[in-house]
Length: 220
Ligand SMILES: [Zn+2]
Ligand SMILES: [Zn+2]
Image (cartoon, rainbow, N blue to C red; front, side, top):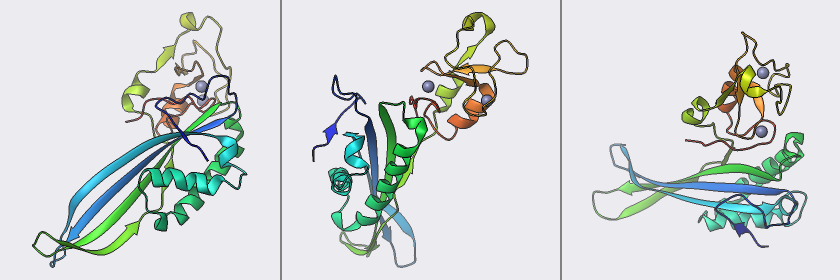
């Protein structure tokens, strides 16, 4: 199993297979608990790695579990607590791959957030005693787009559009897109897909990806 680590989400040249671009963000936090019940953060560290993996290796393959485990180990998630995470990520990848909206995208980007918490006893000295370890379920999420990205969206006016829109229907509400109408503001994403302003603002508050091609907008 080889996982290609990349900065940008570009598959090797000439490779037209679908890929997952998976960014794993693991936050490791150590809390101390004093005798009177106060909890303080002793240490917090974030480890981030991005992986570009052919979809066929992660979906419907016996190698998917070891492949996901390799990614988690790469951000130092202990093997002993990986089981539930792998199960959840594996299920999510399967559902994403089966979503027809992703069929047109060569690269499907996603972010997996993991939080690992350690609790230690604060006895006033320099040494800490580990009381318990807990590993939260991973959150496989599509982050909302940043406020600046939403505010910076291009408004399509009748003169700019020139009658040549990338799509004629708003993929969010399935209603027609009418440029120049007084009661519709039309917004264009950097990928050229157009939507009703009110529809796309609501959508981008949940997901930073274009609903049609999953082009990613900047997140916070
Ligand atoms: Zn709409
Ligand atoms: Zn698009």
